Image (cartoon, rainbow, N blue to C red; front, side, top):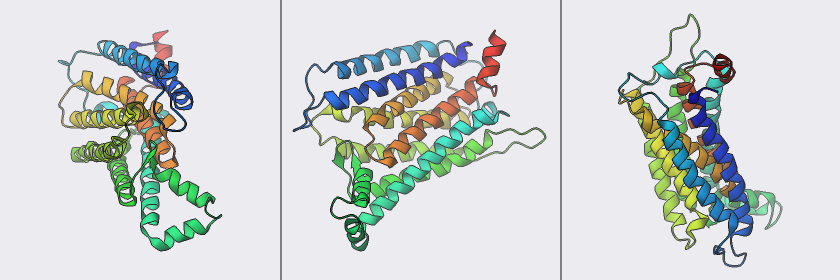
Amino acid sequence: MKKQLMLPLAAAAGGAAALVLRLLQNKTGFEASTGLPIPGNAPGIALAALLAVLAVALCLLTRLLPPEDEGGPFFPEDFRTVNAGLAALPVAGVFLMAVSGALDIAAGAALLNPAESAALAGVGGADGPSVIWAAGVISASGLTFTPRARALAGALTLIAAVSLLPAVACCRRRPGVRPRTASPALLLVPPVCMVARLVLAYRVDSVNPALQAYYVEILALTFMTLAFYRLSSLAYHAVKRRRFAPYAGAAAALCLTALADSEGLSALLLYAGGAATLLGFLLLWLTEGQSVSEIVENDG
């Protein structure tokens, strides 16, 4: 297997392993009555150790990439591919992020409207399915966004996803068709939106005295912000290949881990979409438009 596949593979495998450990920690690592962490919880300790090892591994694998003094990569020139499968991954990720934002906006707007709130409460009684759905969307790491904050968080996610659509459209190259272009300024929108979403999440989560309950979510949003920022720098030909790759890999792994903390559908789609989008961009660049099977075949 060629060395350019090692970093995304390590990110995906590490994220999957961290997801399993986080699920175990959520089941066994917190007091049922208070929500406080249980000292010495094995899955929690293993998760922290795994994330530390993964961070070191991604940094070491980054050193296998071409030196920064070489030309490129530039966006979208070095991210275009004729392979539909590779191009579909970031497209699917952006779509999931957009749906996540729309769900958050709908939930926040429904709870802001007294008539809608009464209608939700009237479906299935006090514990009806609509109430459970709304509560699941509003919940964040065991605490609760206000309806306005949830709607704002959803709007930020939706704006970030919409601004990424022209970028992912530019990555598809068709023979005989002039490549599409998009304004580099659009790639500055996602990091700005993710910073604002991070602030909203931290304001809610920081009230919780148990750092172990929410540190994964904060790390995931932080590295999503950094990865999208580094992607935008490539559109301005500010070449820092050895910064984009580890940030994108770390963000994808942390997004996969954060799936364990996603109590609502919108959060689940946000982190699944973030992981797919960043892994997709990473593969588009590192594989230079080839499919994974082609790279393995050529290496053999």
